[in-house]
Image 1 (cartoon, rainbow, N blue to C red):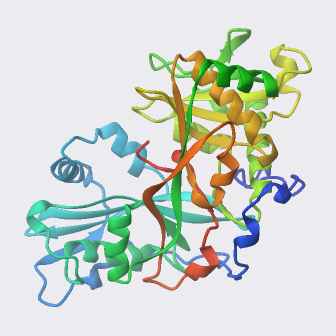
Image 2 (tube, rainbow, N blue to C red):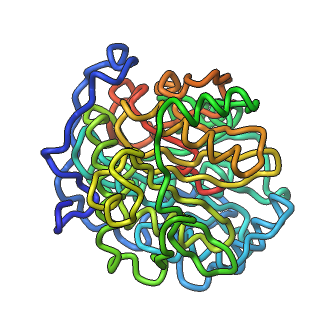
Image 3 (cartoon, rainbow, N blue to C red):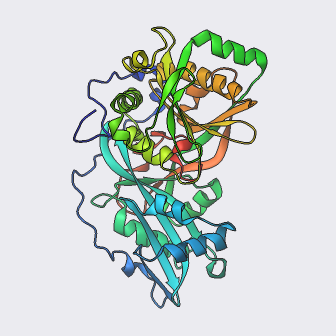
Length: 408
């Protein structure tokens, strides 16, 4: 990995573009991202208040956590813990726009910054999160509403060419996307598909035996003490200081470089070892399993595994009725093997079902091992309010999975 820019895979990583069955349908409209966006004033966006408005808007400041969490509880009917709020917003590149009426918070529009590779070049995108309006302040969605004021405050300050985030994305429902399109906020550039595998003894046996992968080491998180290991390998703690586990970091980054090599004409959130730790190991409330998958051939000792490149990395989360495949990180040509190993792990967990989310444009990669698929009522949007990449240049280019959300 590039030592100066850890999110950028080596330029020598192989490009498996022949493994992308849907690529011919993707347009080749060019666009460019400025090299160094200028600094944004801390109070940018206040000028968006409508004339004679009773509302006041500004960007996130110190001391806003408690009223935001109170609004979250009022809107969604359950609490956001302080630890989860800190995980989302008390980190670099996280922002929010807040709207007040008579000193009370009535609307919130959050954004979580994310390093992405856009056609192989690293830049920043913002994932929209926690969009909420107090019931007492809701009105028809129009350009003097609290939602629209929160949106314009955020976007005018932070999103578009020459700003902190050249582009944004999120996971709004089709209904909310329709409303935002009506206001000229978003345009659709993709959608999400759910792939489901229902296990039977016969299907699991064929999945496990036909590909011969070996998943190890494995990460599990129990009792707040993450450890890496498998029944045949010693446990190695990677949560304390992931940077000291050079071999494991290298394996994760190798899997990430392989995936990035398949997506040189697309947009993909960086999935290096640093991000893996932040997204999965540091999550304050959810438990994830991490599995580096190697070929069975070449021995079963830990040192031998880590001296060879992995086939890929799997990230799984246990659900009541099965396992949720959060991430598959590796070359496209290994996806049948990696998914076969995920099915074997599902069986080992005593679960009857495995499911995953992916961008609809890439759903054919997951249509293996007797999978069933359905489109989710979730649209991938891009911002059209401020100058930025044209929607047609982004159409069907996002690589997104369940792990790209902030709520799974």
